[in-house]
Structures are given as C-alpha cells and as structure tokens.
Length: 466
Image (tube, rainbow, N blue to C red; front, side, top):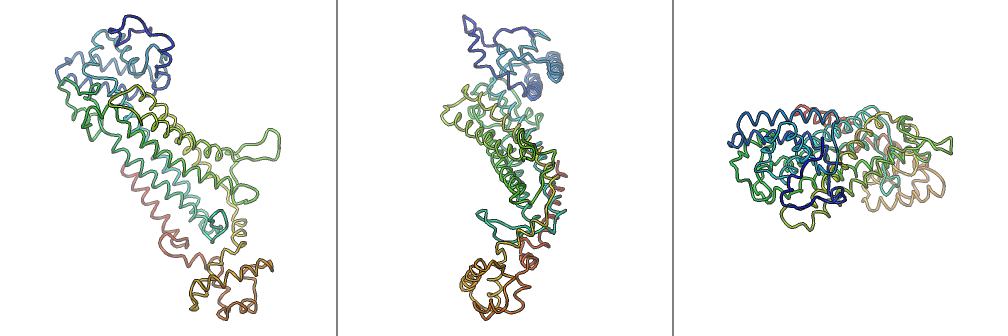
C-alpha cells in the first residue's frame, strides 16, 4: 500500500515534516486494535445505511472491503509507515484503495476521537475476559496444590518471624482469596468498559441520525455514553483497568517473593521445577528462581503504566487532546505483562515439590505453640494477660536451656504456675493446635477442606456463566 494523502490535509499548504510524522504516529503499536477497528467500522457502516447516508449497495461494498482488510491484517500484511499515522487511517486509506471513493463515506459523522475510544473499549473487553480466565487457572493451580498437600504443616509468619502453626493449604488459600478479589475487580470494571461512545463525533455529537442504541446492541454493549464531551475524553475505564492490573500484580509479586524464600536453602520448603529455573554462567551448582524474580520485578512496570496514564490525564482540559495517544502503550504493556505472568505462574505452581518434613521441622522450632500454652492456662481459669506473662517467662527459660516447650518437665513447668498438669503436652501438640482453630476461615483441617470445596464450587459456577 503506497502513501496516502492525509485525511485532514485540505487545511494545510505543505506536507508534514518526516520527524513530526515519526513522533506523532501510533501505528507502530496501535495496529493491535485492528480487529476492533474493523468491528466498529462494520457496525458504523450499517448505522449509516439505516440513517440513509449509505445505500445498501454502498454499505455492502464497504463491509466486504473491511472484511478483506481484516483478513490481510490477520496474515500480517501491514505497512507500519508513520505516514499512515494510526491504524484507523491505515484501514480507511486501504479501504478507499480497494473499493474507491465510496470508502471515503465511512467516516461521515465520525471522528477518530470516538473511534479510538470504542476500539480501546472493545480491546479491553476481550482482554479482560482472558485475564479473568487466567486468574481462574492460577486459582485452580493453587487449589490443586492445597488439596494434594492438605496434611502439610508449616510455620505461619508475622514480621517474617515464625508465629503460629498453619496448614500449608491454608496459606495457599490466602492467595486464592486475593485472586478472587482480583477477578471480581476486573469483572466489575467491565461495567465501565462496555459503554458505547460512537455517535459522539469529535466532541459535540454527530449531526446524522445514528441509532446509538442499535449500534450498542450490535457491538454487545449494554449502555451508550451519556455525554459526547466526556465520551471522547474519558479514559477512566483504562485507568481502572490498570489499577486492577496493578493490584493483581502486587498479589502475584507477594506470592513470588514467598516462592523465592521457600526455595532458598535457608528455608528449603519447596523445590522449583527445573523447567522454571535457570543456572549461573559462573557457578555450576546454582538453581535460580528467575521466573519468580522476574514476576516480582515486572510488577513495577505495571505500577508505572498506571502512574504514567494518571499523570497524562491529570491536567487535560476537555475534551480530546493528543496526550490521550499515550494511553494505548500503557494499556498494552500492562496486558502483556499481567497475562504473561499469570500464564507462567500457573504451571510453575503445579510443578512445585513440597518438602513436608522440612516444613514440619521448622514449625516445631521457635515456640510456635506458645500461644497454645497461654490458652491452656486460660482454660484452667487464669486471665489471658497473666497467662501471656507466664508463658513469656517460660519461653525465656527455654531459650536459656535450649529446650522446646514440650521438652520441659512437670517440675520445671510448676515453677511458673501450679495449673500445669499432664494434659498440657497434648494440648500444645501441633495437630491439636491446628484442629482447635476451627472457626470459619481458620486453619483447622476440616475448615480448610470445606473452604476448598466452596471455592471450587464458586469457580465452577463462574465457568457456567461464560
């Protein structure tokens, strides 16, 4: 396809400087909107026909031409010359080249301002559906690990210090809950994404009798924009998408940080599958958790995408300004980064090998049953604050004597309280500690099994809605 005359060139007496063309062109990245640009243009051609702007024959020629262009682009036949400016002008120019001047009627009453807003909304609707599906796949990978290792006990942490015993499955379900909220945010955001802007013109609305409700129905949008000025300058839906993406990446980064820690020699809780690790160019023994580290690092990219778009938007007067061209690269980068991370983490998690013995050993060290020791004294009638003080003194004694709580004799315990009896040792056992925490949301095995069942049922119900 050769260079085409600028669609807006009538006002200008000289051509655009080549540096300006290169600087202002977006076709190098917005080409990925072409399926949605074609989809919106086909719907708009039908709307123009219904409005009496196009004859049935003209509309048919335009629609067939657009379908042929999409096939060309599907095969990678795109000339990214900056002279074409953007994907919208490229498709329009190619249409005129294919079917003649009738192709120039397609843009009647339509502005690129509303066109790009529609394309981005259609793109985000499609990508959001894929992201929700990939979040679900990661949840299922976590659930499978949890169900397979339901009897594995690990130390729970606060301040990165060992705190209380947990089921490893319960710990994994915490990430399932984070992802559940993430999926809900993306699904909820679709309400703001699926608002149809066509008919807004450049900013004041079109002068042609376009049936906007019919256009919205054809494009699968439940709502039309209510203000033409807002419609062409609104990027709240993109900001919201980037915010949801940032929160999701933050959750994934936290998970990856734990995988990195767990896989270290110092922890030794898990072993990362070799297919998801790398080695060192110098040290032959190394097995590095590069996938998890990159996911942790790439989180900053998505945070940056959000801040970049917020910054671009913060000082814009109404309505459309060219600054809004900066939205697409930010959105595209976040989509690619988030989806790539979700896709690689699901199989990594499925392949994790769990060192249950090492986890249990770590749980038996560090007085993780100290709270249970205090609860034991409470069960004997001692106020909790007093019980806390007594057990704190016992822990100090244990540290000095290099003993664990369960290794203390009755005589040693009686120095701190006469309430200790033989039942103490059974009470503070790890398994007993877990089973007592049987409240909803607790780490007791029966509650964790029930939680897995509930989440699986929720995921199955979600899939049934698709």
